[in-house]
Amino acid sequence: MKLEVFDINGKALGRQIELPSDVFGIELNKNVEHVVYLAVKQYLANQRQGTHKSKERNEVAGSTRKLHRQKGTGGSRKGSIKNPLYRGGGRIFGPRPRNYELKLNKKVSRLARKAALTNKALENRIFIVEDFKFEAPKTKRYLSFLNSLSTNKGSLAENKSILLLNVPSTPLAPAAPKKPQGTRGRKEQLKNDLLKKFEVELSEYEKALTSYENALSEHENKLKDIYTNIALSCRNIPNADVINAANFNVYQVLNADYIVLSESSISQITEVLNK
Image (cartoon, rainbow, N blue to C red; front, side, top):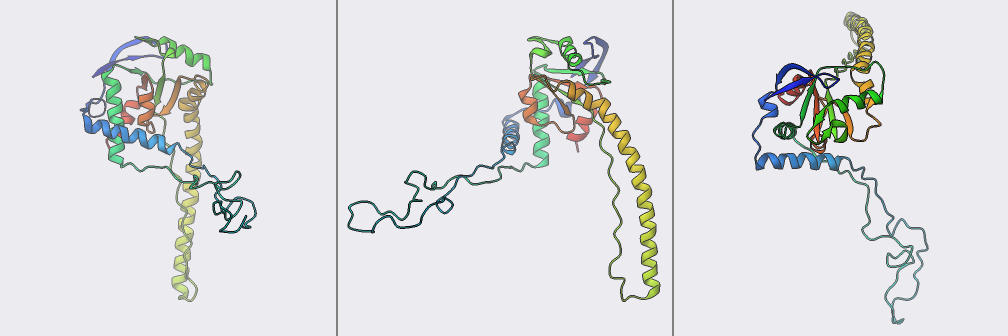
């Protein structure tokens, strides 16, 4: 499937991009629909905090004195005022804190995301825009960008939309060397060799740490231009959202009316889903 590429002002650039068929054109059947259901179920379940709690009989404050004798009163047996049948008593089988998280295999998760993107592609609900950046967060500018893209149901600002961006990956921090253990009691020569090796690894680690800090500062500047300013620009728009293309999920794609892909995010999505 080929789609037209637009600029930030909504003008067609006169070129098209071929969407990978193994990501945006897979076969949809009942098995795939069930996979999508599992992915949505996992997302919604993982949103639950599970912090609900009510006091049971042994946690309610009150006397444990037996209210009256066991037999001969004509009434029911009553152990204490904390009985769940009394007002202010404990709750029977009340909710307790628990974890609602569900596990989903990686291949199943990737298949579900491919199915969600394929569904949007078949319904012609995908826009492709060239890579752009904002010098500073500006909601009015992002709104004008949404208004410039027209759909069958009006402009993109009148529908739910998600912008997927190709966000640069964070550089990995170097691993610190471990100081050798058990040098006490060894021969002096072996002990000195271990300590010298550790000193060499420590100096290399310090050099790598310096280069990592420089790379991290450069990454933060790129992140601010490519992602942060755009994300802050749409934060006050209820129907719009900006997501890293490597971290999108099925629920967000299905819940949106239209998907907007930056030109470079297509390769990132293909790389992530075809691992």
